[in-house]
Each structure stands twice: as structure tokens, then as C-alpha cells.
Length: 375
Image (cartoon, rainbow, N blue to C red; front, top):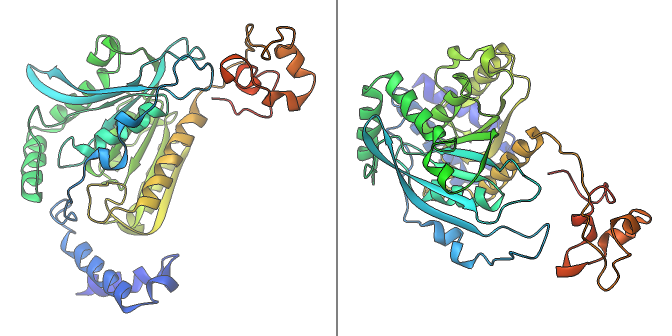
């Protein structure tokens, strides 16, 4: 009772308190959220919001991605995606890979990689859609499998059973499966047979329980460049050490997440204690645990889109800036003398189109430094 009353006192003080108090309906949501928070205090997963029927094609249909191959610098990549089987300690696991099909001449060492850790239901449509989304942003993305091929939950009871079986194996087995997923992006992994990954630029992301495994990749110093997790379950905070000091860390927190504001402050304390040089926490007002998952009944489209755009910007900012290099073949249509050197003489020429309708600012980044952000 005391916990419930304290929750009621705390929640209207959120940044959206005026809006939350504006109707009886939204006040009812606060009461229900507090009941869930109190009930789930000792059971991190038992009170997850119910799932809804959804497939990634409702949000993103890869068949509608139009190829612009051959259109030159700046064209959007066509992607390939599929289920893939890999082996961990003699057992089969089934992940999901998505990657651009055309090489990027600006990335001679390969594409950046992204490993995606699923929520407690197991690898599902939501994580597969996020892998395809990452591929559209120029990543080779791999959604790992922590449970084993064919082991997926369709309800809360099944999810509780699967994550219980996983954790019953002990922390070393959990870490082994997480690292095996990461290794699929590296030389010798199943993904390396399909696309070239720049192993100095591998990133980790995860949802709910998957945030624990995604964060472990930084904690254990497995060579990830950055981590961004969503409505995370915070675990092993005391295991944060200076080994993760150079990993960029980002957390997307629901306003009414089960860990509460106290849990968020505790996380920030441990990030500072580990001397993490670049970290940020972002809180989304009026949202609940699972807000970024389109298969979740409390999915928030605006917060989901904003948080993932923030993740891509965060990862991009961590990448070393490459020296610009102008194309030696680009020129204005019908006039080979009007090349990148000609463009550099006057900035409005950066919007001139060349062969294949390639803009000068895309082909001549040195000539147009103020019109094109570094990748």
C-alpha cells in the first residue's frame, strides 16, 4: 500500500503532469501503471504488457524498396534479409541478417555492423524489422538468438519459461550465447559470408531483457564501439568497470518504466563510476515499458521513431571522421571541364547535377564541405 501511494505521488510530477491530470482517463492510466509497478517489483517479466498481432511488413515492406543501384554516390541501398542458422556449443540457433547489397565506395573496409538482442519472447518480428531498418541506414545487422532454433514464445507464460531456462544455465552460458551472436558479424561468422563488416565499427542494441545482453558486450570488453538500448532491464550495474570507458553508451527510458526514476539515477551513477567518457540517458514522457516494440500493446510510434533516430545519430557521431575525397570522374552533364574543381569555385554549384543525376555535393565533398555532413 505504501509503495502504491508513493507511486501515485511521484507519477504526476513527470514533465507531462499537466496533460496526465487533464482527464480522468489518463489519471486512471497512472493508477493502473502504479498497480503494475508494485505488482512487478519482485517479478521483472511477469507483468509485461500483452502482445498484439503485427508483422514487420505492416511497418516496412522490403519488397517496396526500390533499387537505385548504379545511380552513383548518395543512392539509397537495396537490402537483402533472411533467417540464418548458426551453431553455439554444438546446438543450432537461428538469427536474422539484413545488409546492403551494393558496396559503399566510401567504406573500403566494409560496412559498420550492428548486433540486435531480442526481448524475452525470443527473436521475433520486431527485431527483424529493426535489422532491416539498420540495413537501410548502411549497417550489416544481425539479430541474435539466445534461446535456440525454434524456441520462441507466443505468450507471457512461454516467455517466462524460456528466459527461466536460459538463466538456469548460469551467467557464463548466457554470456557465451551473447558473444556467439556478436561473433557472427566477425570473420568466420555466418554473416561474414554475405557482407563485409568493418570490425572496428560494431555496435550493440537490445530491447527489454535484450538490453542486459547488449550491455554485457560493453561490460565484458568484447570490442563493440557503442551500445544503445531501449526500455532496458538494468542488471549487473555493480559490474560496470573502466573496461567499458571508451564505449559510447545510450539508454532510452520510458517515463513509467518499471525501474523508475531511482533506477535511472542509479544507472547514471554507475556509468559515471565506470568513467564512461560518452553516455546519455533519454526519458520519453508518457511512455511505458515496451514503447518501442510494435508488437507490444503499448507501442508509441512517435517515441519509437524518435528513439531509433537518436540511436543512429549517436552511433554515427562515434565513427571516426574520414578525410574527404572528391570524385575524379564527376562532371556536369555535357561538359567534362566542369568537374569538382569547377564546383569548388562557387558554392551554389554544389547543387548541380552530373551524369546519373548525381549531385555535385555528393560527389565532391571537399568542394562542398558545408553542404554535406560527414558520414
